[in-house]
Image (cartoon, rainbow, N blue to C red; front, side, top):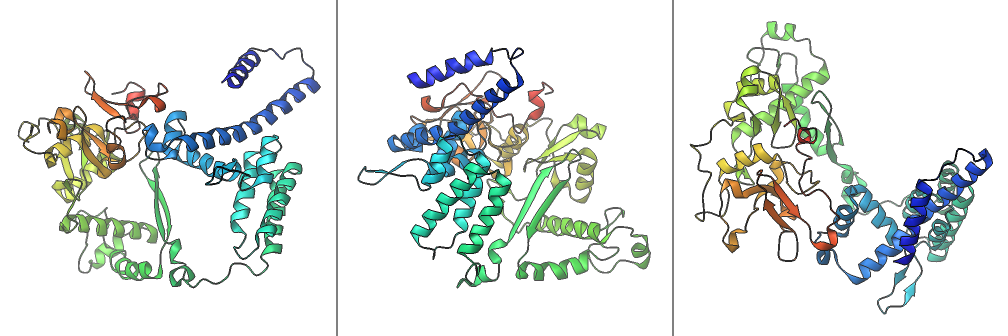
Length: 449
C-alpha cells in the first residue's frame, strides 16, 4: 500500500540522518515525535489484523490459530503474539454480524493509543483493571470507568495510573469479590499448579507451584518416610529406600531437610518409572530416554540429552545408569534394530523412536519447543497414505499440532541432502524465515556440531 511504502521511505531517510549538529532542544523534540509514532503503530496494527481476520481464517493461511499465524509471519514468541491479538480484540474497530461498524470494546483507550498518548504499559494496566470490575456493575458505569482510565493514562505515568486504577476498583467494588458457589473455586483448588522452570548453566531447574489439600495429604506420609535422615541418600553406596536405615547411616547424613525432600521425590519418580505401570507414551515405554555418544561416555565428560529436552551432565548419567541400566541408551551401531520397515507398518518401531529421540531431540518444526517425549513420528518425505515408507531416513519428530499442518495447500516437509528436515510454509506465511528448527540443537548455531 502506498502509505506503508511512504512510511518505509521516511524511516530509511531518518535511519541515515546525522544529528550531531542539532541542539539539545531539537533532539528532544525529535525524541518526542518518534515516541509518539512508536505508540501509534500498535493502533494501526490492530486495524490491519482486524481486516485480515474479516477476510480469512488461520487455516486459510496454513496455521493452527491466529496466534501461530502472527508468530510465524512476524517471528514473535507465542506470548507476544497472544498479547497483541488479545489487545487488538479490545482496541480495534469491530463489525456486527450484519456488517454494521461498531466502536472498539474500549473506545477511550483505543483513541488515546491512536493519538500516541499512552504506552503499552498503560494499555495493560487499563485492560487488567477492566477485567477486575465485577459483572454486577452496570454497562454505563463500566464505560465511564474505561473513559476515566484512558483519560488518566493520557496525563499520567504508568505508576500513577496504577494507583488511580486501584482506587477506582475500590470505589466500584468496595466489598471485594463475591463468594463463589463453586466449591473448588471457594477452596482455592483452581490455584493448583506445578511449573518446572528452565535449566540453568549447571543443569539445575527451579520450580514453583501450589498444592491442594489432597496433594499435600498424599505427599506428607511419603516425605515423612523417604525424606527422613538416612533415607534415599545419593551419597551412600547403596541408598536405603525401604525399611529403616541403620543408626550409622542416619548419623552420617549431613543433608538439609530440603535436600532430603528433593532426594525423596527423585526416588518416588524413579520407582514409578521402574514399576512399568505407566504403560507407553507416543510409542515408547514411559521411562527416561537419554542419548549420548560412546566417546563421551567413555571419557565421562560432556552432556547427554533426555527425551524431555533437558541436559544431563555425564557424571549424573553414569549415576542414573548405576540404578537401572534401562535408563541408558547408547547409539554406536544400529544394525541389530529394525529401522527400515518399508510399507509393512505405519507406526514407527520403538527402535526408530529411540534413534529419532537421539537425532531430533524434539519437534522439528521451526521454533517449536516440544521435546521428544511429546512428539509423534512424521513421514517427512511422503505421507504413508500416499505411498510413503516407515524408514528411518524418511522419518522425523513432530508434535501433534504441527504434524497435522502438513496437507495439500498447507505446510510441506522435505529431507535435504544433509539429512535435515525443512518445513516449507504456505505462501501467505512465507517471509523467508528459517525452515529448520535449531531450538533443540543450539550447538549447531555456533557450528559446534
